[in-house]
Image (cartoon, rainbow, N blue to C red; front, side, top):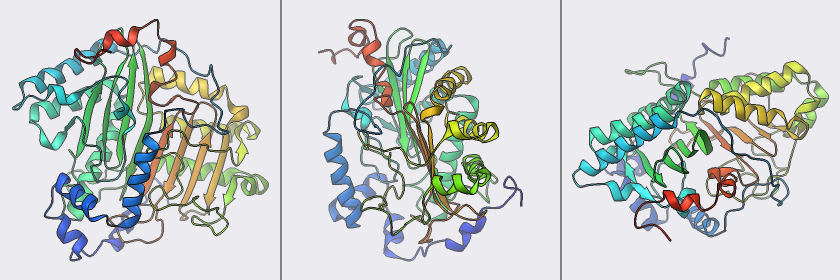
Length: 431
């Protein structure tokens, strides 16, 4: 069956029992009540332990993800990407104007120092652990609309469409489990880091369940990393947004690439045959990220290269790799995307592709593409709200990281002239 027309509504065979205490309690809570009950109750224990671990990881000075523990210098550069910074700053100023006129005023809640450790506090679960900035479902329609207008001004048209689809699917999930106060289209937080400027460094965060974007901006350059996008399920099969679907191209292209390899190359790329393989070392699979290695708070993780080298693939297979990376760079405007993809192509001799799981048409799977300048991961997950105990193709997690200190635009910061960063912080936040 054509992957573009195949229905993924098999998720309806895994709808949960909404009469259980988990859901009857959740249905009565808003987002803050929900996380408060979770933190005070410490249930389930593995999530409570995870959150404690996240706090420990946040205390580590930022270094960046590496393949061997050593950060490689000189990989990233200041460059002209023709980003329309004037229009982006204008949209950011409109957000600040609406925040100032909000009742109560929210301007101060939105403003963080560009060096704030809050840059690194993001997570993709539904529980609101880092309640910074403004939450869209708490604010006026005017402020909410202007925040989304800023997002639209910043991302590519395709990237904005993808982000909105993720948000709408989150709302659809909230309807499925009758918990719209926790899971909805506006259950996302927004905050500025640094002062919006056409000449200085600044950025903003937009994050919530299954959508987390960290956006760094400087002059005509943009860096979106890390980001996370997921969906459970990854299709809306009824209602006003019926037919909305995301992450299927990343799935299709990854499977096509794996299936195109020779049996010998498949054997080398497939590092584990099962998604929860007995051969995996302790910690290689975990409840929160499952097979992902580069999730929230894993800013300094060592991720060794695995699998096969892309430079050894034939031209058609390399084009599939480029197609996958094009999807992962979709949030960037076209020119920024082209510049980033050009940089990625310079490292094909040190770009690795690995796979976990089967690769028949209906098999769930994981894959990773990794080089000194980019890491992307794709993973089919078991149910969190849906009841499937094994990974299914309707629950997908994807993420992008920039290794060697590139996340959050950190590798670009030492390249800025003089003390330029201190010129573009908020009043009252100067050292």
